[in-house]
Length: 203
Image (tube, rainbow, N blue to C red; front, side, top):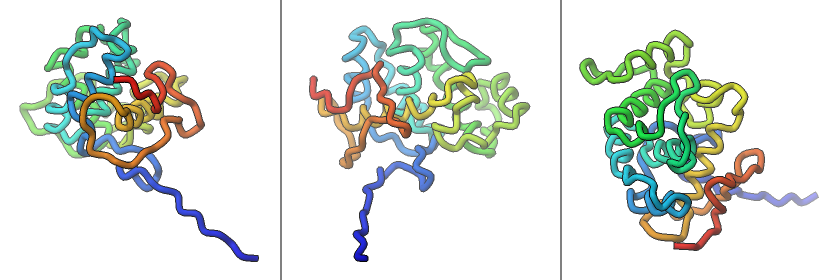
């Protein structure tokens, strides 16, 4: 019987596992990031450039880290978010020292390589990660499930990646370097209702 080979297009940023790595280059501009979130909260703070700059310093995808902050704060509208074992207040997500701490934690989850001496700002939280045996054990955003989030949030990382994909594909304001299009549905087919649909063409 004749068979037909079907080639499925892969997203250029995904690992062979189909997951998105914590470390890597950002794909979205600060303008696009801010405009995307401000569709949901016009008063969202202008911190996209901060996330990109500090993300680049530690080799972390700053645009995805920005989506993580938007996801946890519901686009900067709710209090009480962050690591399940180290919750923070809403305003902290806009402070440079705090954002740098988040980047250090993401770096620590992603690799076993140590941070340079004199740069460590999140010493207490990093110690928790090391005691839990998580250092270098979450190389992808999807691997943060049950580590950054509570054990019951089994799609924490997938939801953040889905939000990022929607932002990448958004046909509104801002520039983006990725041309390929992906569905904004999660791996199990669950859409991210809190941010909007990928085919939203509003500016």
